[in-house]
Image 1 (cartoon, rainbow, N blue to C red):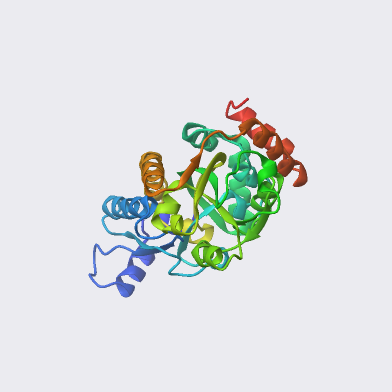
Image 2: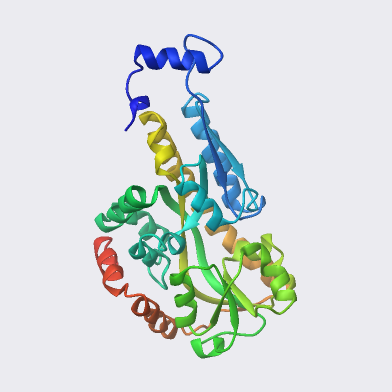
Length: 330
């Protein structure tokens, strides 16, 4: 922890007085520019705005979060590299991408790893998860603020019915470019195709891909029902989102600002997770009403068994079993 977390020394106070208008009583100002790939109509965007508002209130304006939707600051992988270099930028990301730095943490993004938001929240108490987060911060410059943002169950959205892993054979399914995601989709029977979220609609129009695996609100928010006809309820991944910032930048914050950032992240995340759950039900109903075919009679046991191959391919079986045991998942 640096000096900002301690009572101001005379030298520090003098420095701040020189650097800031307002003289005596002025405080250091901090800004986090927070980036996410989702559109302004997504529940997550509203949740991030609430997080920002509460942090601003709690720090009396000392810490400001500026939220940028639709990847306005850049694509996720580029942003993460800027974060690692110490930039005052944050990113909504997932365990799959973080697994590029600490392989074990990718299990959170694996097939059928957790089955409820409550299990996802319990991951915060897992000693193994805590160790992975510390490694991310110490060795890779990535501070996980919280991961209480559960985006719902991901399903396969295609233009034909999918009930078994065999039905996915030969289909090119859009996935983010991370090993656990690629191997998960391959294990479940499809051909993974890396593509940014913003490129999914034109990719489907141009037949570069045959489908995507997303959550229901993604479909309605991006109007993907215009180019997709079937929602196949595999529920293969309960997507747990991670909010990350630079560990160097985080350590520069006063201790009470750090606490506010983390606690309000968790609160807003859990609130937004419930909004997402409700939004998923509403989006499903809206899509069904608009003519999308909802396939509910999916062979989930066959998909679960197929999904185990992803953990085997990435040598993550032991890590998966260990974390699940720590949070009480059988």
